[in-house]
Length: 117
Image 1 (tube, rainbow, N blue to C red):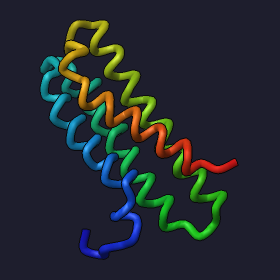
Image 2: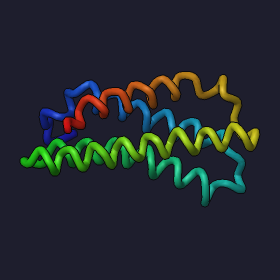
Image 3: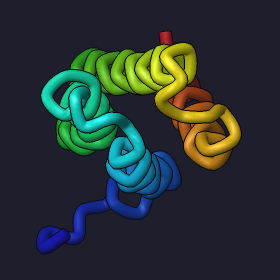
Image 4: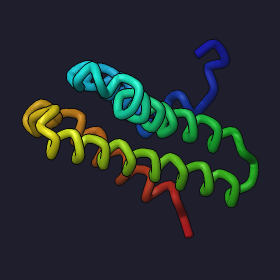
């Protein structure tokens, strides 16, 4: 934000920021008794997606960068899994997650391209 670094202009960074905001918003739909379990885990995982991209972009080594991008992708998959469980538990309707689902898919697709083997 204040540093105006190059990674903040990347599409993946902008998309994951939208994902974080969406996850925080959707987490408010979860029941109050999930406040200290599913809600916190969802928010932590979503934030991890975004933060690991930022940290990965700051690394000089391609091996280090790839590792952070892999962690970011794992966190995106964790977000998807939390939403899958929340649907099965009837906490959220799948229809309510359509936009978030698109962000998850876009994020994973972009990260897959960034993780060069």
